[in-house]
Length: 116
Image 1 (cartoon, rainbow, N blue to C red):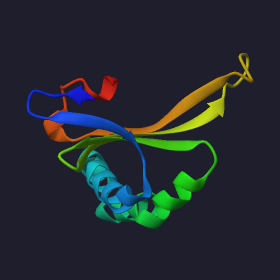
Image 2 (cartoon, helix red, strand yellow; image 1 turned 90 degrees about the horizontal axis):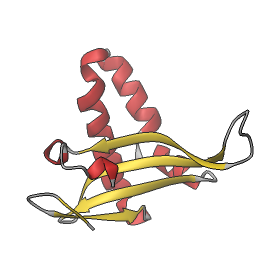
Image 3 (tube, rainbow, N blue to C red; image 1 turned 180 degrees about the vertical axis):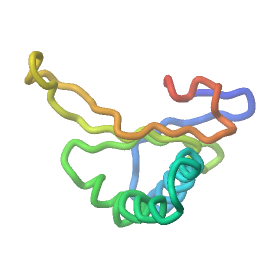
């Protein structure tokens, strides 16, 4: 478990019971981060393609894709979405991970949660 000054945070592998919560948290985090750089139409299109429960289900059933959730008081306060892969040239063939997304709730920023 990780701890912030206000709450204890559990780091848990994704489970299907968190699908809707992951969709809601990831969509909100993405919009909070990027809305000022995009049109509302572009934001809506991207969110509907990548952050709906159906989109997450597709992403998480693909081989090698993983999500680790940060949970506090039953709510998601952060997540990392990564892919297990192999390294490219010149180190090709070695096991590696590729981080696709890493988000932390505003109240947890600066707590070191993203480094856990």
